Figure (cartoon, rainbow, N blue to C red):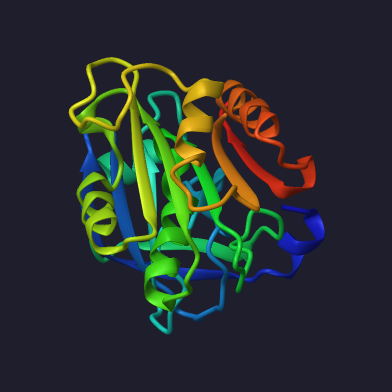
Length: 248
């Protein structure tokens, strides 16, 4: 996000209309926009909280929902013990509360639009959120784009959007899903029981009908570095690899 893009986005007050528990550490908050905006899968919003004494805290969250005519967007927020914003959402926020946000923001990590080239998506933990928006958009739009998703999570119970992803894998013949569990054995034959590495990325990419034309990687700094090196080893050019990082 550039300062120029952020400066053009207007702050608005949005009502929480639904809260859904996704994993032990992640909840989805559905916000009704007071001013509807058009966005592309992969974009994010800034959320701002203001204390009674005037102190403000702001964080950026990717939009999980697919672009649509609805004025409700979904943010999947992971509870961070040392965070300023996420504990409020998990411990205090209730349906009906008003939240300030601005967006959409981000002009780099975006669904590429109509394309015949397969996409390789790689995420870790809550890093799957913008990738989920892309997969949901792929389903809603009906664009004939083969997609492979490699998602790393600690355990089966920590897989964000797990049930929806499993259903999408069954209903979309051109979606390949691979889960990498780092703290317990894999429960499915074609999943993995280790941290991601080059061999894993190459194997998942091979599930696409032809080599990917673009890759999207989202996760921690260390995760993104490993995944990006693995994608480069496939032969993709650096300009065809889009990355987003979170954390220190």
